[in-house]
Amino acid sequence: MTQNHKILAYFGHHKCATVWIHNIMADVCRTLGRKTANLNSSNQFNSDLAGYMRDQGLDCLTYANADRRYVKELDNFSAFHVVRDPRDLAVSSYFSHLYSHPTRNWPQLETHREALKSLPKAEGMIRDMEFIHRDVFQCMDNWDYNQKNILELKMEELTANPREQFINIFNFLGILERKPHGFFKRGLTEKRLVKILDKNSFTRLSGGRKPGQEDQTHHFRKGTPGDWRNHFTPGVTAYFNEHYRALLIKLGYEP
Image (cartoon, rainbow, N blue to C red):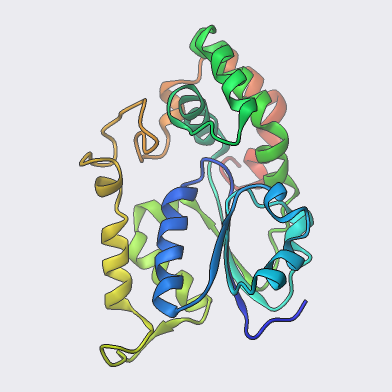
């Protein structure tokens, strides 16, 4: 695959702040005058990510359910990849699938949501972990975390200090300008980045709530890490540890 210049990309996973990060990345790419795509499923690019990028003339990408099989087809790109504590991911996924996640173009979620409504919370959380296993936990486990052109980050670090972390990200991608351009010139300065982050803050996106103020029916539900402790019962914990303890250790969330 060849393109005019290096692709800029964000790779994430379901319920790892993908909407928030996509919005920021999309605003940055518009600032730079780059053509971007927001992808969630391999169906959108017919399981040929490199060909899709080439055919669409794209030089910026957000891929919210990143699968290593398709990412490895790309060349000449710089990216950042974000993961989350799988326990918090499981809680966030459960409430999202129960209440707020759009079902358009996802008929399986409609059926799954009806099943969740009929189950107690603990049983529903286990059912939801089974539902997302292949597309989320398995993809996170299969990811190559040692690629020099991909900056690896935890969502918890990103949400705790967005300004510092996104400065680090866009420095890594090589697009943060040290000297301001003229008013009509395109370029990502720290000043412009701060405006983009403010536009996409949790408070704005959640309708005025601060991180930690919960609305279980809202897509931006709570915005704080460690919430799994409030929802994991002994049964849910036992199921999670049996299936995903190794992933938790691999990602560095437990020793």
